[in-house]
Length: 514
Image (cartoon, rainbow, N blue to C red; front, side, top):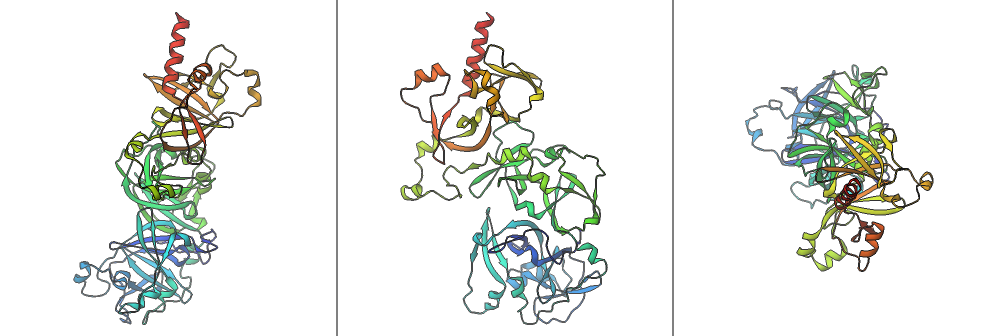
């Protein structure tokens, strides 16, 4: 764990109009506490012993020698009344090791608090907090310490009022001055460091929405080296990304549970990066991050350089990560809980009428909703094996050859024909006037794979497939599907049975060959 100072003024947007947005989260015993990022000066390992200081308040543990400055340290577990039996064996202040010390900055000065570990960064805008009022009583002094509560992604805790803590009778604070080489150490934005396999990575906090503790990994609906599963959070199933595969550094071992870092992407989407553990939250001076001298490490240009002030850390470029097209595509496939509305809460109709009928819920299945031209269409998700970015350079154009195929690509050791559903049966002389496809959806049936051109990806939603009356003949003539689904935003989408289409096209090919 490194000890890096924090800047006097943040150069990222960590506040919103209604108050601080990004918070650092720490564990104190079984409790989580959050502190606005701007209130955290730095995080350092707890030394074997703290310097002796007068016990001006019961929670005083001693003094921390921080690069030549003496910073008073208090025990947050004692202050919040959550201290456990481990405290019973401490004969003197400073004898016990509490994991790390979080040095907090206030208008009056700095002081440290003992916590067990840093858990990561969380977006706690005002609307995600619950105001808490403490009735006057024996511990009414805590009313100046606890600002609010939060419950986000299954994690609950309290937000601390750092400035309010300076009103504690007997609390000593140190002058907030730059000491030794602190001026050099405090010149960068907050960075979350985390471990994945044998690597340590750093990512600027302004790209991170939250860190999630270890939780069950739901299977990925497609066989993709990057999209390895789904993580449930706030009524949604976020795509879980193999961080090492994304960066071109190998692959993460298969796992049933995983911790993750949720990152925000351009356009507002979110994905979860698979990690082993959060290491620390530090600030890194620009002259401590060394670029790659024009060389490329890994894939996608996400790795920006090496941070070398302590144990080496591969620094990730948050802007490149947020603009990564494959991640943006995956983020559009967030699957909402089938009994939840857009915000993860039950819809009004469900609140009035109770839960969805058991029979209808059993009939729900996930569908991939996509664009063909200007229209929304759907396909059963269990028929989708992979989604590839459209790359004309990899394709052999068959657009002017009679038959159902518009192109052929080589993929995973096979020649895969490609069908253009949107333009099937249309005059291909008009293709140039139409939008360029962006993706190739790979579907399989009986070990035969076929690609389908898509103009866009929209979402993954669970619905009951419903037939359309009296359109069977039309569907057979035009090659269009009969059943439909109705999406959450009220659109009616035709459902394409891709497996049946593959078998039908294969059967026609066999007849022609005969």
